[in-house]
Length: 157
Image (cartoon, rainbow, N blue to C red; front, side, top):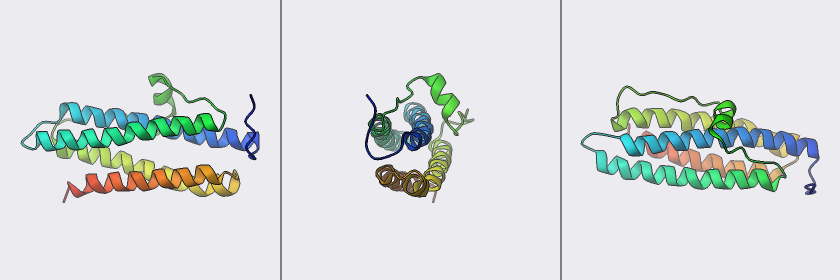
């Protein structure tokens, strides 16, 4: 059934295209955060193990909400690793160390990259595509990533 919510179909498609890419970014970041949770080593293991668990829990919620936003707009959410790797602007990395600071630096870089990507699209959603709902949603998502990045950055002081 056609989605009829006051936004042109071509605009819905463009919004969904950006959201699908964002979903891929979120899923890759989630996977990297899980890896940090599972593999972190060092004297601070327990605290960082729990810290990374909190962060991947937040990302899990983001992924679900984002996929549901895509569906709300009448499009389908990708759900395979192949699709995510083709759609993401992030890259997989092979870290040389499993210490917490190495993971934190890598995850912080990804959060900051997502923040920039989200910020670049907020106005497009509202003005160009006439979708203030997605603009508002992305603003909230941006704020969540800013806070998650702050938490990571605070470990580096």
